[in-house]
Image (cartoon, rainbow, N blue to C red; front, top):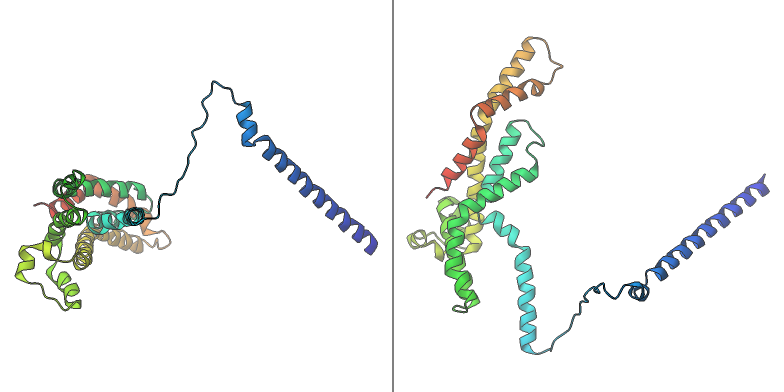
Amino acid sequence: MRQGMAVKRQGQRRAAARLAFGTALVALALVMGFHPSTVCAQTSPSVPAIPGVSVSVGGSGPVSVANTVKIVLLLTALTLAPAGLILMTCFTRVIVVLSFVRNALSLQTSPPNQVLVGLALFITLFVMQPTLEQANAQALQPYLRGQISQTVAIDRAEAPFKVFMAKQTRTEDLELFLAYRHETLTPEMERHPESIAMSALVPAFTLSELQTAFQIGFMIYLPFLVIDLVVSTTLMSMGMMMLPPVMISLPFKVLLFVMVNGWYLVVKSLLAGYAT
């Protein structure tokens, strides 16, 4: 028996070795068949060749090093652009309120996340259009024409966003971050928000946006909570304790939301919060 098992194991090892060897041969044949020289030789002269890409390294002087550093900083700024979109615009309030609406309706995947994010993004672009146009006219276009430097362009681009964020920021939230730096909110800062540091204004604005979004979400939850309580109490009185109340309350909540044109009212309240 032991000798038979040994022979069987040896046969399995040989089969595995043959399989590995055959796989290596097939891979080698594929590599040789699709070698670039072979493909180029079989290509018809009338068919244009694929254009090549070459990378060259310039000099090592101070100018080239400075340009390289600028490119790295630009790429880093592009990676931080989504954070700026979320924290320096109305996107936070809009997406949080829309998420509250979906949760209040007891809908887990409808509307999908892509729809909510897309709607929040376009509402953000609509609300922020005057601010973006002002930043484009004051900072971007003069910088592209070479009239101002990069530092001046950044300062001018920050000013419209600071004015927008200061209007939506609560005083106590801003004082929280200023007090950490041993600073106080002066009347000069209130009249000219451009003098407030972005490192203090951005988190204060985000806290205020979250506070406002949760207040709107609480008001949205109230009518749907009443429906859940009524349905749950009715099912308990009828002795139908094994039936989930969500199955019964969901159609009524959707019906109520559709009858009052809920999406219109929600977006209207969001836009009214940013009306100038």
